Length: 347
Image (cartoon, rainbow, N blue to C red; front, side):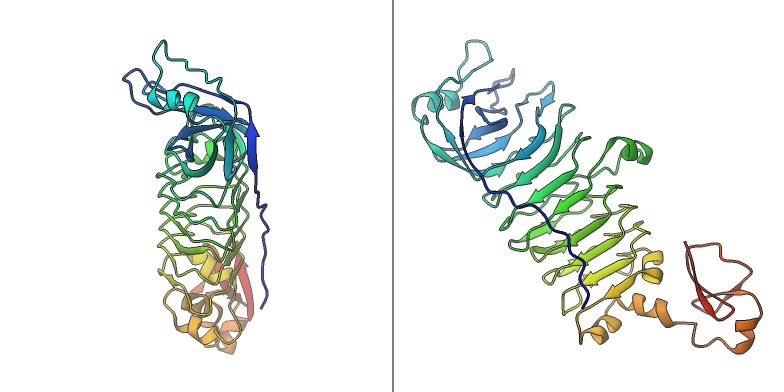
């Protein structure tokens, strides 16, 4: 069967570099911000062998992400410089003291992303790469990332992406087109990922998506109104696509599904235009299963229903006919029509 492939960059990295400390407590004494900074990535100590990636400061007044350029999160970092800079008056946090005294020289496993890591008006990363060592995303979301063009989840990545992970639902569409720029999302073949509701909706610069073999479930409206999306590949381990997961993605023209058992979808997982005009490719020998499966059968109905029943008069009278055999003077809505015996697609 024909496959549409998108290849992503997998990045592995171990870092040893100069370390600096950022804010460690907000004005109320809560430890929200980074303990150390290594190669332009901010970390909090979890214990003497693990760290989480965080923002520069997540105090009450404002979240300061301070990320820019290509953010390649490593699996391991080595803390080899005790010159922590504590910028909170005279008060040293317990974590900072431990870092100075006990943690110097330690190599840390990078296992978590904090919830606020990629928030803020100064979130200027152009790409983010998440390593497979991450075991807890802590409901992390991306916000204010105007420059972000690509997101990579490295091979073996196995974390769920929370609802609204990089959702633009509450932002004006014209503003999105002018100010947001996400073009590529790379999912690994190995791993286990569930994509939450609204996770990547309104990302109007995406043109192709491969839901790779690591993807198992895709939530409602996960890619809603990704209006330039043209090509979609659904990997062999995908079990379900939620309602309106690809709603308002009216430019999808090619869908390739690699799963032999049809993933569960709703009647409105795709738009009417997609059911009527997109080319669906399924594994050899599985067509009948898809032809009878809820939602998927609409692709087959759109290619045949109403067309075979048209007689010679309908082919010669100059009118347009819907796929249900209803005559209209001219096509007003997007979809497939029959005109003088030939299929016509209204874009």
